[in-house]
Length: 369
Image 1 (cartoon, one colour):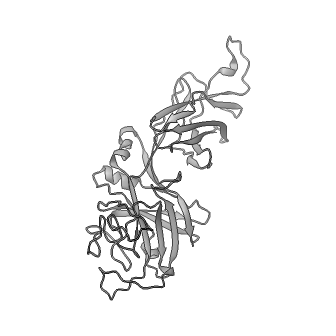
Image 2 (cartoon, rainbow, N blue to C red):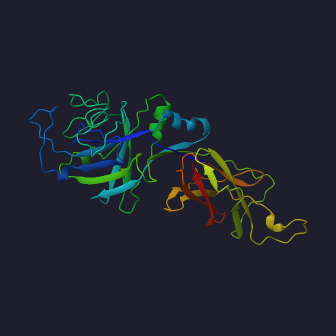
Image 3 (cartoon, rainbow, N blue to C red):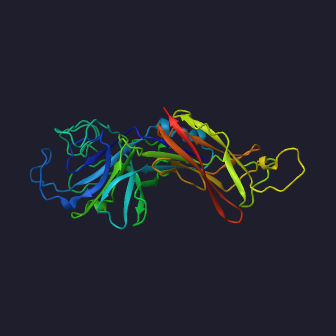
């Protein structure tokens, strides 16, 4: 198995209420509809004076480079998945159920160097009106599908959206399968990144107020957006090793170096497993050192030691533990982990009986610069 985390090269929020403003260096990405709290009409010079604009829709743009994404073509030999992850900073007035849509941006755009707090506002870079810089055009996002409520613009897109539905008790972080879109890029479609928005029926509701703020690539936290490229490259060949088949066993990792450079690349962790109470045999070596293979239904996960957030969760397809004639193992890509953070390795085994056993042996390591 493999999970490879990629960080964005650019992101920005675009605002219908401030349609010329660029926010490419903001620490927050907004996906909001605040139509219900606007009480003051306003006009924009590029729009006829008769148009009183009251909508307040906020969409986000985010992009990852082809060079980073193409790792999947070099390593994945079977099924693979691309997952877009955004981590919630704060939210207001969320409904018990709602959804977020992610689409494929139809044209290139420039992140710019603006912030929402800038005065005067920075107009060079992506904004509600234009993908690159503000001109007299009311809507420079042309050539592809686009929808807006009252203020023309808001980005454009090609193809259909993928959607994540949130219910009352769900995690409010965005974790959406965008394999369909990434596969379009591999098939020759231009990679202009993702557009993240509420459904059109929410955006065009004149009384709707629902706000979600996610951390951007410019955040000073450990929660920047990521694109997780996941694929199954596991191999299970036990050779002469016996396989653990009961719940009386112990596991350990024997080659944890405890610190790794952030650019180390892939590192293979070896997992030793043995019976807790081995049967007595006539042998010149200790029966307590006989290594066995974990079952094929064994998995690993990764946790941030300080925040206790699960960075990579157990997954039946993409975090399977492999095995060769030496023993069980899994590969971990260090490149997608945050420098100067400590991480804990967690292990889980599902026995043939269906019993699930988890191990936390305090196996930790640090990523250093």
